[in-house]
Image (cartoon, rainbow, N blue to C red; front, side, top):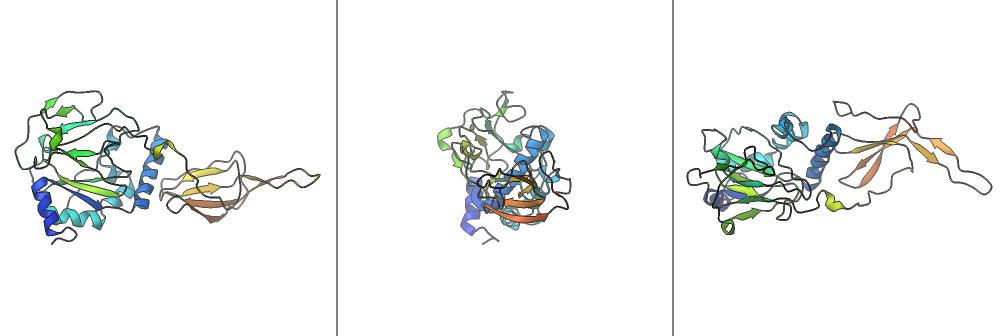
Length: 288
């Protein structure tokens, strides 16, 4: 019996080369991580590409916290032993209805590492299903030597050189479906791949109500903070029109916070002065 994995679960990993699921983070927490990623993407002009796709724990504090979670480290320790080193953290993001895919390959073919005590922990920040192009593995393929790869440089292949293993029997493969916040662990020599994302995620192209603000307002600012909360500041409010009178606009100086995890609003206090139409809000590097 390990710290979190039972003896039979460890034996199953040794035999098949994968194990799932482990609860790496609570669902609400994982959804908050996704919102922070999407906020970063919106501020930098689009989806992650190039260097920011790799070693994200050096770029995002919340990702650095994620890789240190006992729920993850204890499971890894059960499989490869203590004194765990995180070698890299990579993003694999398929946009909705994207043709991008990952061909069958083995990481051991080109990582250039000289240890067998190495696993990958794949954490889902959104539901990873067959429809959305979840990870697929070939059970037991981690026990043999590296298989022959060819380089295709296919435009839609997310691998740098489009490296792929020919002749994989898809009927023998297993889909590693995990929900938001769950993770799958697999051996670095196992053959794996993933199909394109055929779903409409993110958020299934639908809007959902976010609850009523504490105070009606317009022309306010909305800023996503580093903790995933949304800060609404200032703006204007129309007072209700009475008989024979016109409505009156009042500039507000209060602010409130929206928590997407609980779908609730709370007061964030008053500013020294009112700020209405035309004011701006800036998220600082320290998250304030």
